[in-house]
Length: 464
Image 1 (tube, rainbow, N blue to C red):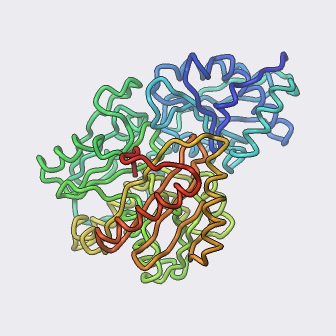
Image 2 (cartoon, rainbow, N blue to C red; image 1 turned 45 degrees about the vertical axis):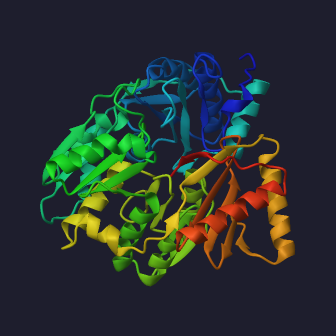
Image 3 (cartoon, helix red, strand yellow; image 1 turned 90 degrees about the vertical axis):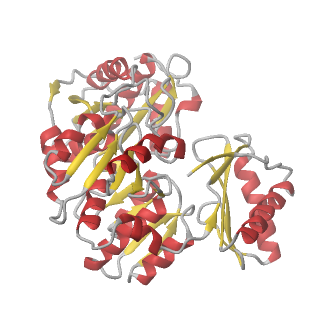
């Protein structure tokens, strides 16, 4: 095989992702299949499960990836159009040696990419760089792998609802946002009690209704409106490939990732007292306090779904989550992030409680905080800025955690500064008991950045 070099921008920390026709082409998909297949074969494996999302470029990238995998000597089992968690499930269900999901997740329609599993574990970081190096060197295996088609939809839906619990019947609105969850949503809700409405069920990679990212409030307006119109108990939304969840209470208010995790944590800890529950550094202090109050052991950890999955397995943690809406159940589930499964676990809690989801939300302490603030910083500078800020904090004797960037505790609350692993941006977030305290925390972030020659814009891009 001729050596193949990738555009270096597509080899990310947690996946491979690029702009179709610019930084990502079918030839790249073929080379990814060949190099990944080589790694499977050299690891003693033989079979790879392959799925793809609803983006317009996904079928052609899938065909090229299949060619590469088979040329490496791997047997490919195609499971077809699906959400990412169904591909993860297929690796377990089919006992495959690896899995590849072709997906652009929640990125704009002209993006696409690859999320991978090697065995039952995430494939990320150094693994992705090693794949790039094998391809660039042309150091790949040659073979003639087989090809099979296998639907896991029915088995997946049955497994998701196996953990549904009886309770009062709920009225639920689901917004799949024309994303890949549209493939499986009917199979799941048809097995659940209650009354269910689905918005934008048809899979359409142009995303004509709204962008499929439930962390951006504007994308939830239609869901809010339908929940209010129907007097529904709650609404649930998904990102484009179904591994991130958003939720709306019966009053049309958003529950962010850390608020949802607090609710799930209480439920899990009833049966798993003392268990470690993991959340990323962007989560509210309220969450960590709620986990401790419920008898759990809270652990603040790095942002990144692959990193958290590995840490969960290491500690035997039954539950973890991120502000971004990635939620990981190892309690009765496989430990991977599946928003549809997480939604069913949320319905369980609401259906078995005398309180509504809105009442559960209101029972949580309500600090004031910023969303995640993101601002541009050169790729070769972003980590250095964080290191400089950390050094000054150490010199000043400040109280902070450096598990991922710096999260600084003050009498007002806390502020966070970290470098994104996937973009040329710095990320900040602040949380305080009141508005005046929040202003002081934001001023502290600005001052910390200014000392490193970085100006924090008045209106940085925001997201949860």
